[in-house]
Length: 325
Image 1: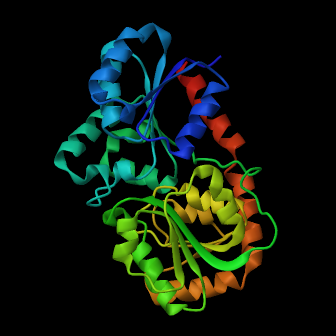
Image 2 (image 1 turned 180 degrees about the vertical axis):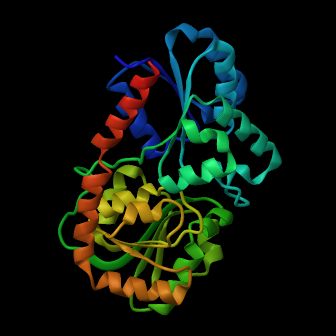
């Protein structure tokens, strides 16, 4: 039996909830969602003190304010802490990175110092963390996220279209995810349909996309397999990344990935996709090659099944928690 867990997170991202469900298969999990409370720091501190005999380890997804609060209280309660980092939590990109303000940098120094173990989703992210916070080197492990390859799988013939997916509410995040680049690529390939999924109306209006770009708002996670299954290519020309789950899911569905080599993207794509420059004309050429190379999509799925399965993620989490027990 693994130690009992207090699982703290902000938003219900699919990969966060997936980890919660994995842990529930092995031990008791108490869940605290930061954004559900009007005064979350106070609510979390009170709950941690009141229920301190009901959990043994605190697990926080992302190094953000919720982790800072949880780990300060954990230190008082003498409880070990595991911090999972995904990308923005060690970035200082304005409008995106948690470290873009002096106040948050001080918070980050605290929660990284108090963490018993840190799990990074990629080697690149681990390197960035250690560069910024050298003392984390001895307690950081690389453990990529995983995808359910039974649910995310190919389903029949694909259409010759290009898909980009991301939850994007602000223009700053649209720039981080490279959606302005997607629009420029679409201008170079007017005969190819491009689909943007997950953005806000404000973002779509500001993009001023050409007529071969089609957009839709937030897509429920349960509906995303159908999007990937239909699309021949997934385009992800980000400026900053950790280990994008949408690429994992799309590759599992047989999409050919075309992406910029930032963060953990090269580790994810490997030889089963096309890494390109940030220059839209060159990205457009990469998209043309991807559309003509469906066999790369077959390799992409096999790479995900081999390297990034849920079973592999589950084994890694169990091993880390067993070491702390």
